[in-house]
Length: 87
Image 1 (cartoon, rainbow, N blue to C red):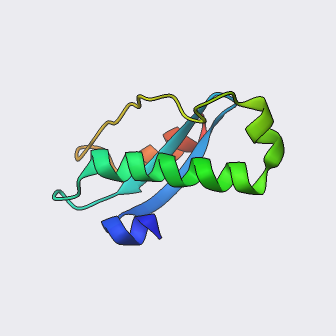
Image 2 (tube, one colour):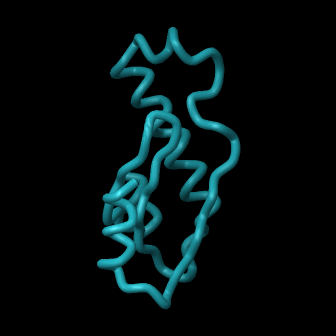
């Protein structure tokens, strides 16, 4: 629902035990900070609700307060997909 609300399309997701890579497309007018903060809030609540063991393992915040965001226009989507898949 969040992606629809912001007009964002998630292309690929991958990561490790302590981070996640999300490749998405968005319009230039999308408020990316608001989108990412909403995504982090909703996913935190959903994961805690569906997996009570996570609530016990994580003291306070599920996500770290920061994030890294990079935009690109010079690289093809195929190159970015491959990067995310290899993480």
